[in-house]
Image 1 (cartoon, helix red, strand yellow):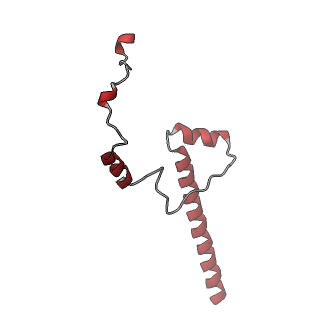
Image 2: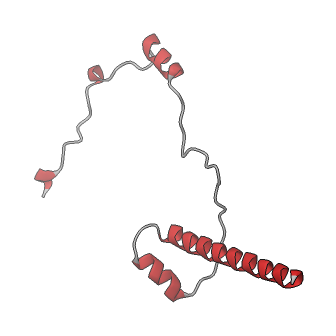
Image 3: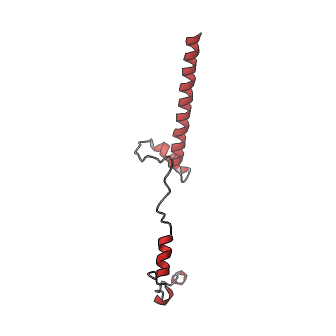
Length: 98
């Protein structure tokens, strides 16, 4: 069992470059610092929502990205609701004009 493990013997100091040398300092100064994700154009809001266990189970069973799929389902519901509200508003405007 131990034959498959790689040796973790320390590396000789001679093999590691001196990172305090001037050429390395210049490279570090010139390097662009990138930390974390890029800022999103439309950042999401962290919130807590209570859902029925069967809803969460169904989304989780579909695999990774289940929270994104819940978000997509809510976005689709919102689009349908807006379309329905617009259709009702147009219907009321037509009935007033008649």
